[in-house]
Image 1 (cartoon, helix red, strand yellow):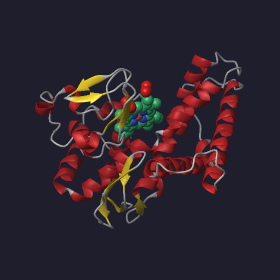
Image 2: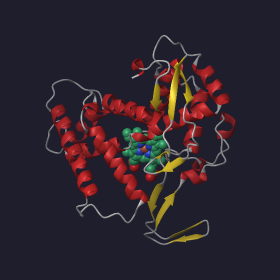
Image 3: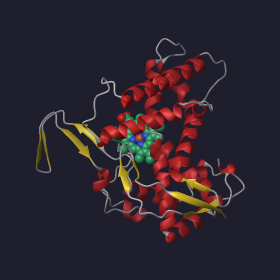
Image 4: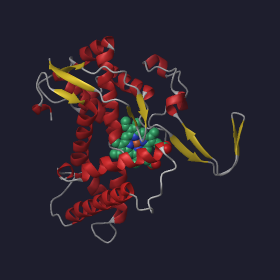
Length: 305
Ligand code: HEM
């Protein structure tokens, strides 16, 4: 992707980062380039759009009612299923060895037979559904670096200590404590997993509030994260549950390590070569939907360093 950029290229950050995370999905999870060459990406966008609409409007007609939107989304879901079945079945008949997440799922659930494809299909589909989350964090990061020069200078200085002759590696990421602090801070300000929902299985009293059995509870990280910072010194004093961008075990995000790695590596690779000027410095306000994106698109001009 970066080889198609040059100084002066203007990018719509969220769209570009979504493409980056799609490619990560292709290579890391599915082991090939099929995904982006199909309508799957479009179906994914329609599905997230539909979920967002449902979140914003609880009175939407249920899927059984044949409105135009409902017909479209059902079609998208069917096409995604057909596509994923085709990829899975192709893999089951492949004689090559594969070392990716899809293969692990198939080994786990199908033991090499095509008898039960539903579980791996649903697993892949669920993972697919979360793809936008790291993209949103990278987008917020670019916006903030345009805005907060001091942070940008410190981050560039840290990343510039890495050798530039190779692409950034996993080991390099361990040498970037300030980058980690910046990502943690962005996850605090813009927790992409916007709400955690729980069902009370038994009645309980929490902080003086009576919760009957069957009550639905929503924890809103955006509201509880407003006073903490992430220096090595400070982090030791923060109560364990005060900052849960990935939630904690046993409910922790299954993709937390890979997402953190993806955010940091993508970011480092870009920063080694480019700085940014945000063209449309509209006040970028967070927009709550399936994830926490921005209400207006962040557009930036890339300047070759
Ligand atoms: C910045 C990126 C991400 C953040 C901040 C994030 C955060 C979270 C959080 C807070 C939960 C717990 C939800 C709960 O307890 O109700 C969760 C669960 C989960 N996440 Fe992520 N996530 C991210 C990226 C991803 C990605 C890229 C994937 C898949 C490719 C993914 C897959 C999952 C799955 C499957 C679960 C459910 C785990 C379970 O219940 O066992 N996440 N995530």
